[in-house]
Amino acid sequence: MRRILSIAGRAGFVVLLTGAAAAAGQPEILPVVTILVDNAKVLRLPEKTSTIIVGNPIIAEVTPQKNGVLVLTGKSFGSTNLIALDSGGAMIAETTIRVEASRDSTITVQRGLDRESLSCTPSCQPSVQLGDSATYFGTTSGQADTRRKLATGGGAGTVPAAEH
Image (cartoon, rainbow, N blue to C red; front, top):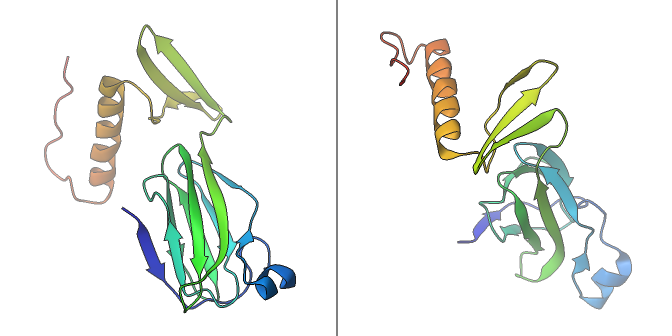
């Protein structure tokens, strides 16, 4: 499913449109934008952009802001494209979005077919990543969810016992 967001276009999109491409009526092909999973990057939209299309919103998500600014968030590994259209539906720019895993401070432990990730900043602690084994992912993210609920008052009362 394609995610389409209509917004008022303003200035630039990673790079401003060149006069030659705009005059020729051809879309500007922009450089590849690389972002890490669970990280955000701020982009500028081309002038006169009214619609943004993300090829695969499972990989990257866009959130339009004021003044032609777009926040791009890496959601899952892979690549997709981002297209800017003017109010007449003509494509004015296109770029490829590449979402990669963070390599800084992350250690992967492989036990047979099971994988676990640790964030070592500087002490190593469990950190769920896409591709971790289902058991590790479920246990670790479940603990994080329970902790988050307790911190926000949503989980006041009993805490589920850990399974052995």
